[in-house]
Length: 116
Length: 112
Image (cartoon, rainbow over all chains, first blue to last red; front, side, top):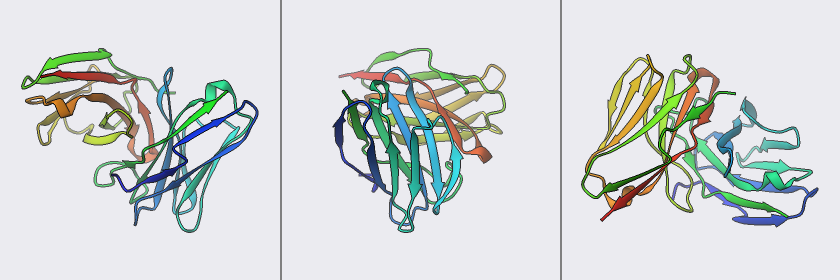
């Protein structure tokens, strides 16, 4: 158990809908990262927040948005869902701003999103 | 964006043998690399990392080798065990920019 929690575990929805994925980082971690893992594109970095502020942005679509709240939990909002958005969405957390080295990322168990 | 690729999508080894998983990266400016292990139904787990100012780093039963000349990264697992069966990803990063680019993964099967 990494200490990172994600809810829900599974989510099934229809095209055009909007969903919110939730992540609680490990106690004491200030950074939260979001990743998308799909069969055809592998693991892709979406976005990072550090202590409530956006820190780094990857291949995140405009239909997707995220935020980190004062209690440090984070939400990833996916709107106007398409079939291709079906994927595993992982959240990771780390203590500091820069991932790696002594600032290892710990991944949650993921949310499996299925868009029908 | 950057692309990180793996040469072998599936690798089968006998328990007790050494495993070598390879990875090619595309950005010569990348200065930080990580290997992750992902077991079925779980999120990726950090294994070992290496900075570009090093060419080798050892952990517990694992060694990462970096060849910047040919932009190649490898993960060596000594005395492979059934618990090592998983998908392994390499990732590259420009450290101060904090954007990781992952390879497609290599599945390691350890035969008892």
